[in-house]
Image (tube, rainbow, N blue to C red; front, side, top):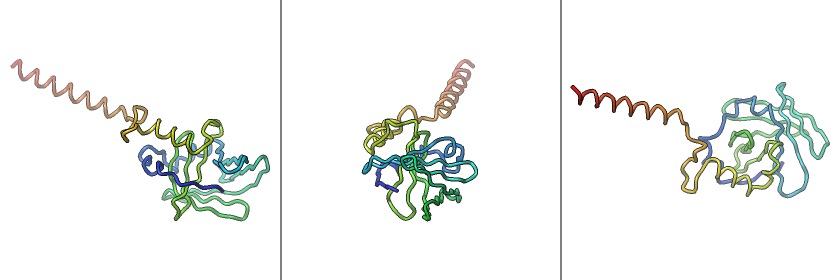
Length: 165
């Protein structure tokens, strides 16, 4: 399993979905990024904790367990891998090999355009961070903006009412 060092992953933690959101994990087929070979490895996390790993169409069955505390255990080919949550969104899953600063990068199979580290880094920067490190418009929680505007309107109405008395 190929792993990579990515500086951007820790800075995206606040935008990440939680690893315990099992439906996001099980509703997609995840292709592991492997820039060194032309092989395609697809990981399918089934609801019954079965893990199906297809390497260029050759299938190996294994298991997976969410252990809590942002850890997931993958077992296949007589190996077990303990990962920590790195980052999760609809198109990218980054799992940090426990005790290492390296990530296994999985891409939603439907996003074949995200097939290199450079493209993934560009995608994540564009989607979550602007050039100055401030969240982009896509990541703003608009409910806070609406509440803030509402409070300002209430203060303005209060001041206008007091001024008219």
